[in-house]
Amino acid sequence: MLPMNDARKTVFLRSPIHDDAVAFLKADARLDVVTWDNARMDNWREEADAVILRGMDLPGEDIRAAKRLKVIGRHGAGVDSVDVAAARERGIVVLNTPFENSQSVAELSVTLMLSAARRVVYADHLVRNDGWAEGRKGKGCRELFRNRVGFVGYGRIARMTADILRNAFEMEVVAYDPKIPAEFWQERDDVVRADTLGDLFAACDFVSINLPRTPETTGLISEAVLGQAKPGLILVNTSRGGIVDEVALATALETGQIGAAGMDVFEQEPPAPTHPLLSLPTFIATPHYGGATEESLRRVACSIARETAQALFGTATESYRVA
Image 1 (cartoon, rainbow, N blue to C red):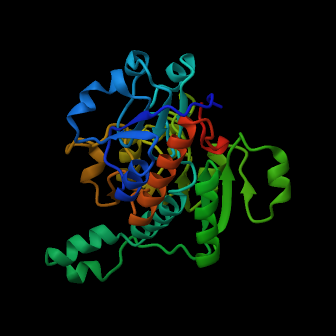
Image 2 (tube, rainbow, N blue to C red):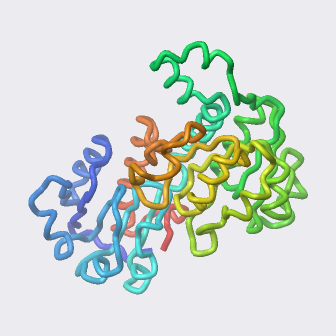
C-alpha cells in the first residue's frame, strides 16, 4: 500500500468519464481535480499525483517524465494501453476495473452471435434496398438453440456469456484455457474442456474469443486454426484486436470455412475503410463498445474514481490493483 499522507493530491482526468464520478472526486476536499477540458491538462506531467485514463495510451516515456505520479487509474479492464512495466519501475500503482463492465461485454457477445447467426445487418440492408423477397429466404441463417459454443479463454466474461447461452438456448459449452488448473475442470459439469485450440474449433458451431492481448495471444487465431474450424462456424471477438488474424479471417469468410463473424475489436482501431472484412456481408463490426452501456460506464467510472482516491491515501482495494 502507499504510505498514509493527508496532503491534498492532484488528480488529472485525462479523458471524459461519467459525471457522477467527476462529482464524487470533486466532493473530496483532499483532492484537486483537473478535468480533460482544463488548460492545466498540458502540465499533467509536472502536477499530477494521479491520472485517470479512458481510451488512450500511457507510454513509458510519459510515465517516466511524470514527476509526482503515484497512481494510474485505467477506466476499464484492459491495461495493454499502459506501460505497466515502466510504472512498476517507479513504484507507481496501476489500477483497473476488472468487474464493472463484464455484464455489458457478455451481452454484446451474445448479441453478435445472434446477429451473425441471423445475418441481421445484411437483412436490414436488403429491406432498405428493395431486397425484401431475397431476405425472406433466410439464406445462411442459423439457430443457437442446442448448438455447441466454444470459448477461447474462460474467465469472468466468458463464464457470464456461457451462463446466458446455456440458460437461454440450452447450448453445450466447451472451453480452451490452459491457464486454468485441472481441478477447475474436474469440479464442473457444465463445461467441457478442450485440450487444444484445434479441437475446440473443430467441435463447435460458435466460438467466442475472451482473452487479453499479450505476446502469447497475438495472432493466436491464425490461418491454421481457422482452417481446422467446423465448416460454417460463427466466430465472435469482444476481447482485444490482434488476437485474430484478420486477413486470414477474411479469406475464411470468403471461402465459407467460417460462416459468419462479429468483432468489436480490431488490430488497428478504427479499421481503415478498405479493410477486407468490412466489405463482406457475413461480417459484423462494432466500434469497441462492448463495455459502453449507460449502466456500465457509470459503474466503471465511479469505481475507478473511488479506487484512485483510495490509492492516493493508502487504502486501494487489492483486487483492483494491476501493479
